[in-house]
Structures are given as C-alpha cells and as structure tokens.
Picture 1 (cartoon, one colour):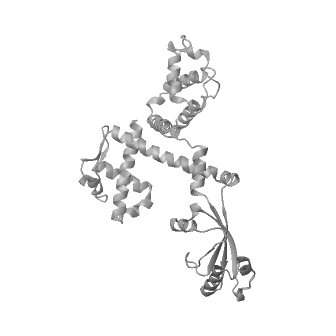
Picture 2 (cartoon, helix red, strand yellow):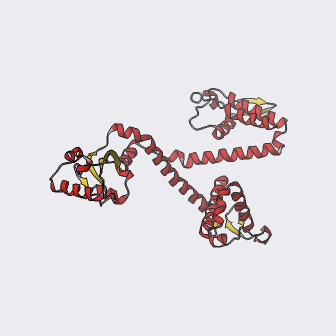
Picture 3 (cartoon, helix red, strand yellow):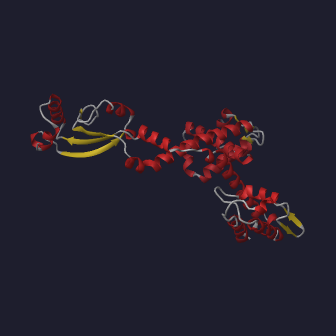
Amino acid sequence: MQRILSTLILLITLTLLPTSQAKAWFFDDDPLVTIDGNEYMPEDFKHWWGFWKEEGMAFPDTPEPYIDWLLLAREGQSMELDSAPGFKRGTRIFLQSRTLLKLKYEEIDSQIKVTEADIKRRYEENFLPRYLLEGMEFSDEATASKVFQELTDGAVTVPEVLTRAAESSGPVKTAEMTLRASELEKKWKDAYKEFAAGDVLSPKEFGKSKVLWYLKEIKAGDDEDLAALRESISKDLWKEQEIDLTRNLIEKLREKYAVKVDEERLVAIDLKADMSTLSDDPVITTSQQNYSEKAFSAVMERLFKSRPMLAGALVDEHAKKQLMIDTAYNVFAQSVTYWE
C-alpha cells in the first residue's frame, strides 16, 4: 500500500511535462476527454493546471498529462486508496506542504528582487576599501615603541627597518595581510578611515604593543574582486528580503486571523506539571482555532522530545520563558499559513 501511494504521488508529479506555449485545444468548447460518461472541459484543465504546475513549467503541448492524472486518480479510487488512513495522512501532508510552497512563492519568493545595482552597492558599503598591511613584530614592547618613534620622527623609513637584524631593533618576523572594511569592528573601521597609505599604526592603539602595522596600500574595488563575492552578496541580499517579506506576511496573516498570544499566562504555565492540572482556557486565540494551556504544554512536550538539546532551557528561567514565547509565535505562524 505504501509503495502504491508513493508511486501514485510520484507519477502525478512527473506527468507534468515541460513543453511549449498554450495550444489551440485549450480554447475549444468541446470536451477534452470523456471517461465513463463524465466530460472534462478545458475549464477543468485550467483549474487543475493552476494547482499542479511548478514554477517555470511550460504549458503542455497536449492535454495528455491531465488525462493521465485523471486516469491515475480513478485507479486510486477503484483501489479505495482514498479511504485508507495512510493515504489520507500522506495526501494531507503532501497538499499542506504544496500549499505552503505556493504561498511562499506567491507572497515571498516572487517578490524578491536582487539587482546588480544592489549587489554593487552592498559591495562598496561592506567590502571596501581593502587595506593591505604589513605587520612587523619586534622582540618586546620597548623596541616596538622605539621604532615607532623613529618612524614618526622621520629618522628612518619602513624599508630600512625591514633590513635591520632583530638584535639591531629590527623585526623578529613580518607578515602581510589584507583586511576589508566588513572584517573590522566599528571602532577599528572608524580608526582606519583616518589613516593613509604609508602610515604606521601605533603599537598601543590596537592593543598589540609588540607589533607595528604598516599600511602599504588602500585598494579600491575592481571587477575581479566583485565577481568573487557576487554570489555570497546576492545570497545575503536575498535572505534579508526573504526575512522581511516573511515577517510582513506573518503579520498580515496574524491580523487577518485575529491572532492573540497571552504572553503573561503563557510563560506562567508549569511545564513540569501533570497535564490534568492545567487549564482548558486559551492562551493563544485566533478566529480559526484556540490553544489552551493543556494544548500548548503538549506542544512544548513534543518539542523537548524532538529536540532534547532544548531541555537546558528549563533550567534558566529567562531562557525558558523566551523559548515558550518563540514557540507560541511559531505555532500561530504555522497555523495561519495552513489556513491561508
């Protein structure tokens, strides 16, 4: 039975063959097919296509995929799959998941626009300039301070310092590195704005008293560097828009279904208490369904069983309350998207 169910769903999905644009048969007034005396019109196909088509899928050349689907559905009914509990559950999960995917595409994914201008703007704001630095580590703080003073006074140049032996106030070791603006904390980012190419950064200012940093070059952006970062920047921008649109969708659905969470009563629920001692009064109310103390406690119990690592939140009172509030909003977020 399980194999038949899986095969049926797979065949239903795979029969949607990508092809060319809409054909003349779609606009005919004649039935597309008659099965056991039941006529199926182009309007029936239109309804089916609107539900089953995948993003980017071309319109079929012929109504064959729809006819195959009708025959598979009738075969499933003749085998009484529609009355089998396993089939009902599998179908419900499949349709719920598909509905959620369609809702996500329509309300979120299809609204996301990441342009080349957006990518370049983020590149310039977060990844430029690039600082090419040469670090010179000395034997001790005193030597580093002495050399820094010599450089500040103009008594010696960086190339001259680099030729010195360690015992003659030269560096013990040197290393080059490139830093991007995005890799700097805000206080360092502001500090670097004050430096110019050729400057030597004070050993004390950056908390590395044995090291002097020589700013060899401040590099601007270029096409090659942008190309290397384009994909990651695009993903970041996409994710940011996805988060914002998801938040907006949930808020819109929250208002539509009059969702209210009684946070004060919610966090007061004793998750270790016997279920029979909890109230049937709602702590989450909506226009479609309410969740009582008992129901919410059961949700939390399932959460801890499925994710044992969260059990530590029960020890920390603040963490526990935050987890309960987050879970409550996740419950309504999942519920309202199903209702939609």
